[in-house]
Image 1 (cartoon, one colour):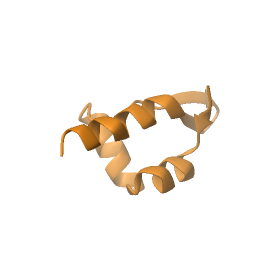
Image 2 (image 1 turned 135 degrees about the vertical axis):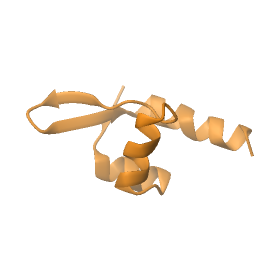
Image 3 (image 1 turned 120 degrees about the vertical axis):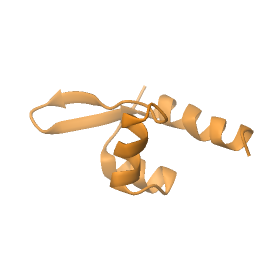
Image 4 (image 1 turned 90 degrees about the horizontal axis):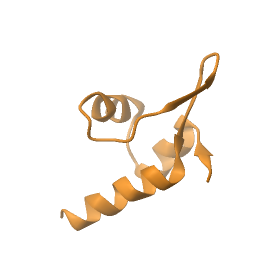
Length: 58
């Protein structure tokens, strides 16, 4: 299991910061987890699954 920081998620998904947070709030993207003060990350396998679901839905 690996955690991805926001910059890595943006590069991996080609989404902007605002798009990631908007999709999270709409329940359309994996939720981030808190790593402590001002640090959040995403579980890489959850982001990968989201990407696979996007491909399946095209």
